[in-house]
Length: 496
Image 1 (cartoon, helix red, strand yellow):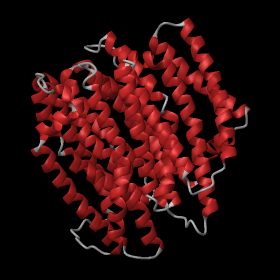
Image 2 (cartoon, rainbow, N blue to C red):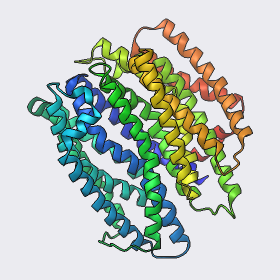
Image 3 (cartoon, rainbow, N blue to C red):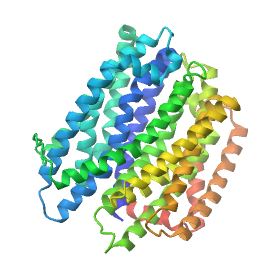
């Protein structure tokens, strides 16, 4: 199926970017460790990065692509619509940047109340002011990515984060001795410029940017949907912000622990989950719900089965190998044994929610393609509120610290998925999904037992992780084949 080809293309490019991302985090952890200054940078970086996730991985694609595809099917002028969206997007990005730069001290105090009065508070404010203009660059990147995805180009857009990671790596290595933590600010801005430039050439081959301030029915439809859709993706980020506020009151370095743990989670999520969601959005947007509901049902069912097939081994691997992976990636330089243990606990807590968050991606894409932007908003809101309540109890009542925050985030993802499933307008094949869940669980248990056995024989983290990934994955997929999991056969057929 077409969306699987799109997903594989996206996944391969994202794998390259994620590998460079881990090298970036390794370099940052080695040079700067986990302390008040790194917390200050991660707080500042979270702001523009949140807009990137909301725009690039969420609302812009979810609203822009279905309307663009509809105009294309009807033979209407898509360039006028695209230019109007680009114009309004640019104006909004500049306005948001001016606001956040002007009120940086107050925003920093709200996001990290634990920083107020600390020596690094002024650094956090300065970094916010310097790094926030990145959102203008990444907003343009998100728009160019949407255009290229529409044309079936998923590889190059997914590869662009590699440039950001390379920029961070070189800035940290060569500028840290001169600029200290501000070297990362240079890396962020330079990386954003490089991302814009690499996408500009292929985009200009079919899109000529113009300033258009029209407000026709298509633009009205765009604005009518973009606000609740942005709120839907933004609510998730609000949950992260609340976690950051709570983490700032737990212990120094807690924000960094959650950041590093979330980076590990982004490997399976970024390689497969986001790609699957974007691919399903583009593919399903070609169909009419009235005439081709069966095709939508078939593609969504397969997408969910693939999400289950991939997320289960990823979850088991991250939970069982969290300490060894953190040891390999970060435990050197200023990254201490305590940093390792706390980050490992955060990884375990977040990994529990990997399965529901990956399954959410294609399901939300179907809602957006069917022009339903409210249900994902309600689902995400209920999930985040539930997660916040659990976070407060697990951290302040049960004193579970960083681990409690991570577990609360996973509970959020399960609640959101349950809400989406209950109100899903397409009757997906639950029986087929449960069969895949059963076979994947059996395969995952086989892999998990092998990992336990390997850990009892070896002490070296690199050896344990290397053997577990290669032989454990082989055991998982061979078991799935023996159990005749059909979704795996489809991937192999397309790969060939």
